Image (cartoon, rainbow, N blue to C red; front, top):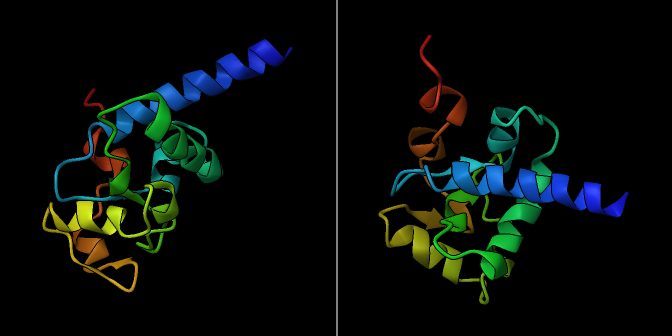
Length: 119
């Protein structure tokens, strides 16, 4: 039974990683927006766990572009130093003041809109 849960979790994490890799340079999204896109509304915390795991399991995942629903850098302590997440965002032109993304609504990348499948 544990193996099935672990495989399900790994699959979810891989799906999260795939979405996060699509977030454009200089844009941010939220844990909840990713969860909703993946059909797992209410699983923002699991997206956060995936972002934390991305630091040790996979390279090239721009986890710094994922913030909470208010634009706060709630995952900053998982980057080795509390300032690294902010520095990475600022290197992409994102302004952060008091651990919060400035103009969050303007630079928010919503996968439900941006990745909408045209039928």
